[in-house]
Length: 209
Image (tube, rainbow, N blue to C red; front, side, top):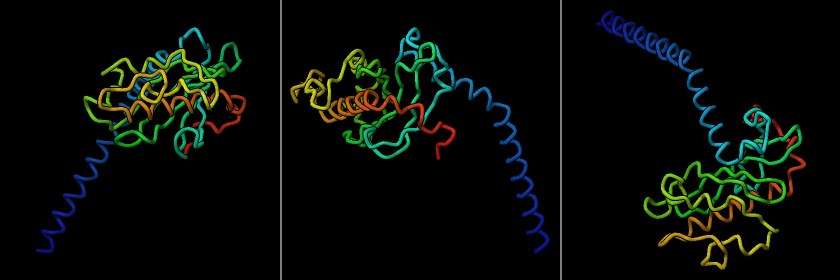
């Protein structure tokens, strides 16, 4: 009986070792392909946020980590610094709208150093399908309405949904979601405007915990 159990145990251990080796081999063989695909998708996202003519550095290679409550919480957020002929001109930065209807909404915002938002996209959310999910580009073009909008300080009342006296449309039956996104984009554009001189001194993404 004991010998049988040992035999079965050894057989299971062998299968486990073979499965682990096979999984590791497949991962190593496909890792570069997966990474290349992810890099292409990220580059396409950047090109949708920033006109390619606006910068000429390798944006993906100039990544910094920001930890600041102005971005919605104290979590690390990635910031990509755009340069034109070596001079910093804009930033693409991850940010969080913590007060969405169904929880935090993760966004990415491109803004220049004058407080002008160049583009915004939603990265992740849990908003109600058919209502709050209109912040997704595949559902609605609402998120594109931020492009070209400039924030003139904290008290700029235009940066609110129409129900609150601002110039951004709310969604029928769902005001909380767009309100949260507008507030987050405003905060982020102001952060880029007021802190851009410090970006080059931020820790690089390799240092992210």
